[in-house]
Length: 206
Image 1 (cartoon, one colour):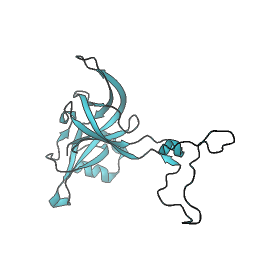
Image 2 (cartoon, rainbow, N blue to C red):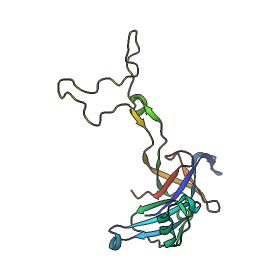
Image 3 (cartoon, rainbow, N blue to C red):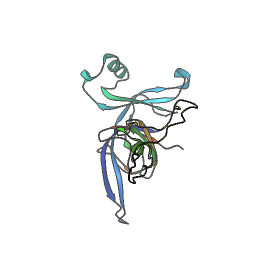
Image 4 (cartoon, helix red, strand yellow):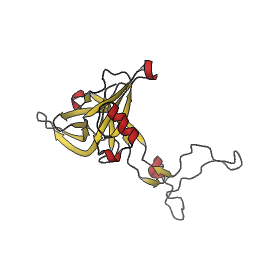
């Protein structure tokens, strides 16, 4: 599994010099990510590679975290992510945006923007009730179940509640361009998360 950790910087647009087509892109500051550890089926029961990202001062990490990174000769990093799957990487190597080519299909995982407590129309795309004279059902959810039988509300009924703030994976994205010097990855379209939010970029092996 090929992947890298990054930070979403925001969105912009690029023009194709030949056709003049405008493409909206998300700018991701990806890597460099040193390889901290490699998990194998024989030793750990599964295959994975552990990457580190975002340098910080030592005071912001616990002693166990500092010891784990120092054991593999990696400086203090804010994020540690394991990418499941077989990999040819070895501890001490560094993953950069050079691992991805323009035109390559990828998938990106991040935490979606939290929107707080929302009603059923915004949260679940319900239709609103009639707005004729005397109606009191303009944005209400309506019935949530029968009364006598079963005399309760089934689990999983779509109702009002907290919206967003969940782990989301966007599939079918495409790498438009990369900037090796500035560690930037330009991805076509929008990706989950807010500005400066952490994301994990992986190859789309569907």
